Length: 455
Image (cartoon, rainbow, N blue to C red; front, side, top):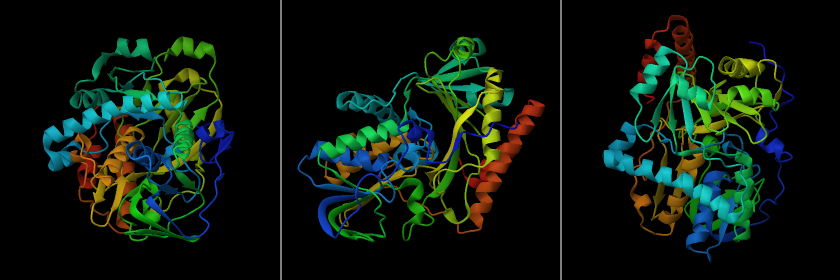
């Protein structure tokens, strides 16, 4: 389906555009200096780590360095799902902490959804939060079979009629509703967190790329920051750091936001609970109803750029816009003809075993967190909280969770990882087309999962 040309394309994201556009507004480092803790990366992971460091030890001096501006990366571009979804493979994480450890991590993620909401209420952060749950729909028999195969409490299985009573998704055969999820406006959360940590005394430096990370120091073009503790939260941009090219693959994800939809549309579709919405396709989509009555919908688009390159400002090819618009109209035929206000893209960090990790070495006092495989809004908050506890030597139930201090396996060198990722998503799209045409599950996606070792 040929989509309307977006009124705006790139420029980081629609979320930032709502706030007047993202730009460097803070100073860069101006000469060498010292700090107790230096955090590299000014997204959710870095900001939450700084927040909890100051909560635990208010007298600590904390500096955050960001290559662009605070919230430039996935933190200001994501789908706005504050979800308790596990950031990785259950079986992989179980190898580190057993089934009991995975269950504990899932509970902490559910608790952290409420913690983020509570922090926003306490600190006066208006991030358009509505805890309406996560609704996953199946629009074909194979999708329904997949939904039922991994369905487990606390999710509630829904009939087609029950799905329609919440959101009238065209052709929905059933679904599941997970209560532990809220819709947010991502950039508003970044802006609010930045304000709060600055008020607590954290120094945020923008336009300051890290050129080296060593025990006790972070190098930049403007001087060296000496720090007793150095923590990294660079997620999809990690590959640009020295020695980290194959650590986490920067997977591309793209989104469009429609013009505001008329009340007649919402009268027909419902969506009054503001659930976030996904499907059970192999190349899945994710969507939300925004606070100003648009639909923001996303998917993979061009999944990966050769050599782990990342985009400049989120510019998105028209063919990707066409795919996302087509998905929107398949779910909601009444949306056909609505204009597209904005299209954008960004990268998320994907580990080779498709599972997130946070780590801290008390000897070198180096630490990092990330690789959230697309579930980073809640995971980054829990990871930042845990990383702060590890750095300050505070033992809690979080510091022994199975994603803590796991080994990180590197990705294959090029051209193998480019061929692998593009081949995997080509297989998923082929499988979805076959399933739509035949009504039967495609074995192609299962083969792609096996070869890529994707859960």
